[in-house]
Length: 132
Image (cartoon, rainbow, N blue to C red; front, side):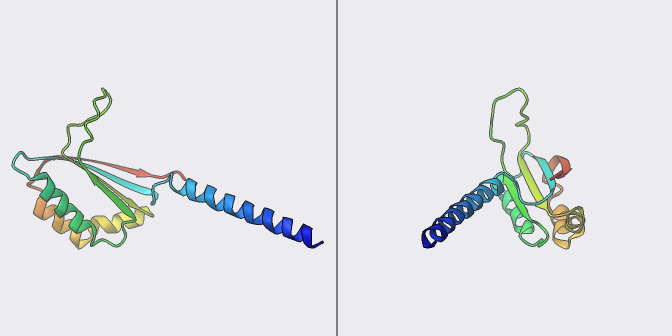
């Protein structure tokens, strides 16, 4: 009887480890946050890109409803379907549309726009609500 109990516990342990590994691997496939706010900036020629990125990151750190964010420059992938013409990309994720609405009205976001709107010549924004 002890041998069966040992085997049962061993199999349960292996199963638990397998399930945990599977869940961990699955969680790495998904971006945290169901609402994605994607912003593409075309900066004015005299704007320092690195200073602009730092300014953007400074304001993002002040907004607590943000689940995650990514700031980047064009990757320079030379494919016909890829638009590499922008200067800076920003992807911000939120748990809900309500959190994104809070972000839009947040004092730090409004000040950021006021302080930086002369640094870009164009901005394109795409919002997406996750199906999962």
